[in-house]
Image (cartoon, rainbow, N blue to C red; front, side, top):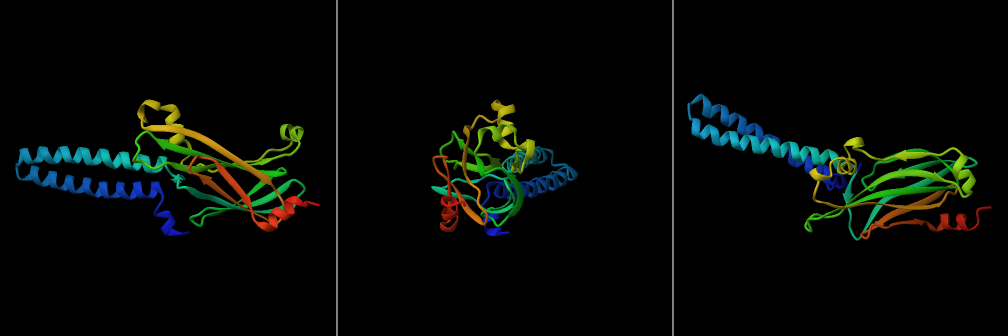
Length: 223
């Protein structure tokens, strides 16, 4: 795993700040106890206020850190994933997913093509950068009839589960008023054996999928 890339993730930064806030909270707790032991009630009251504020900040940073697990900063063109495909049997594939931070995951996909979907998050505050996360990988059949009746495969890539910011925003919109836009974007390409694909996300929110040269030739001449 690329620890440099990991330290640039919003969730990592927020959780580091939460640890710092927690240390400050513990310091205020010790200081409060010291003031109470020496009978300095006025000073103790000030420490109590700082303790409450620090504890609330710790909870807020921790909550946002967990809710933004899997999200990454969206630049002019952000690499989302690289995909490597290997055929197992007709319309059955093993797809190896490579994230920019070095994380790797192998999944089984059924169909004639793969489809990747991402979630893009923008804020009402202009100083906050847009974020994105990979949402799911699924198989897609060329024949609509097969799409309706053949076995389907969908891989969920949400790292935060039900605590994901997208789900929290849907359930409690009043508690997350700074969220401006939450929308999805998808892209797909045909699956070929030994195929290698790169998926990027533009700042507009559009996903772009590119096969390498050898894969493009296999797509153009599948037989």
